[in-house]
Image (cartoon, rainbow over all chains, first blue to last red; front, side, top):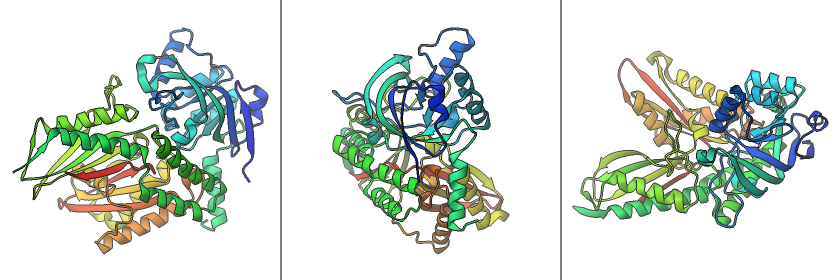
Length: 189
Length: 279
């Protein structure tokens, strides 16, 4: 049975160690959106030795570019984009203290190794459930790279944002184990 | 000649853009409900239920059910007796996209391929125009998401690869795609033609209703076999395990060069934003 866990950001080392691949997590607190273009800029800033517009220590990045908010709403639809595109940037951000990421789809080996080395977790949210997920966002503000439009970095205040942990700090990968488990149970292998 | 106003084309495109992003296709909703009922993975069931709840929220509150509201691909079948008045057809279509993505609070997801600068209004649309008999104008809009398009490909197989080679390629590529394209997916396959035509066929195949039965028994059998095989993989909803990785496989074919066996795979996510209107 799936284990359910409430977590609140920023994440401490102990909080991250208590999360296992396969857990269903409900996230509370502040998280940040960033996708392709914002990642490229963050890394560029780091390479130039400059300060980042957001402090990443203990934080979670949501790979998402929301649709525009209707008047009176904090945000439009928001859901995960495919994560592997952020793989080239991720180890460097984990080194900066980033503790979690939310996206969809499997990560490359460098990222999986970096999650173990720098103690971070990778989670997925249900892709294409962006109206549902938007309900968990109580407040959203653009905090960097406004010119990127949907790709700007947003600070989100979330309540019980549902995600599933895929890669924990122990090297487990739900994409591998879930499929295997299913195949064994179904008698396909 | 029958006169159709460019402004009517704009209105139609605008409405289809908004409706296709706010209202999940009823056929897809039914397919997801059916998948949820026969899903054996507990996590898979949760995910499929989330998709159903999500569609309800989107419908009731007129917010897009997915934040990726796609790149607008418009197939136009224009009767030869139709004359568009009041502007260029392509301008009318782009204007409809511009207005629909603005007024529908849809995401603008189109950018320069190299500078990555957003065009700001989700234009230009990609337009495929074909001339047909009659005095009607048929507009089909497919607002295609980026995640599933990224998992699509074209390959030039050898004629010797045949049906088995085609099936193997499609199945292998679907497995490689795994959780990336937001399964449960819909698989469009184009066989034959040439490089660009195979890709076009694969995209056109995605426009077919899910319940459409392929009239060609060989293709119908291939569709069934591919569907069974990819679902047996256990990738399941979102690639997190289960028996519902794909909802349907749709194949179209066209004659090709004696030296070639072009094959295209176009994967669509469960959002499957499609609408059509006849003016």
